[in-house]
Length: 160
Image (cartoon, rainbow, N blue to C red; front, side):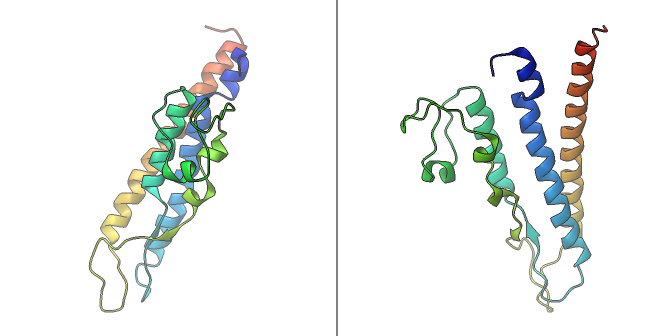
């Protein structure tokens, strides 16, 4: 996008913040499910791939700014490359390519505590802590998106 309006509306920051908010929303549901099942025998906690999302976010930010910081291993295995990279790709990767659906899919989490006698690996303090951190991340992303929208409205309406 070479036009300034296109960059404002579909800009890099807005797209990345939208992905952050969507990831936080999906993770909120998974973490809330863990808390809801805290007393369920044999329940194994679930989570999204936070490290994978962070790597995809880093790669997307680097990719969007033309930096050869490298793509995650799943992207390289799929044959994706940076524009002008080793695989000769010249088209920029879309956010859908940089953030595959697997990152947004819940999986059984590695137990961080001992498993109880009933087979449950619960830790309510950890789950609530993760839920609060996740909530703050989503609030941040939504607030920055709202501020960008207000700025855009001010520019469009030509008010100071």
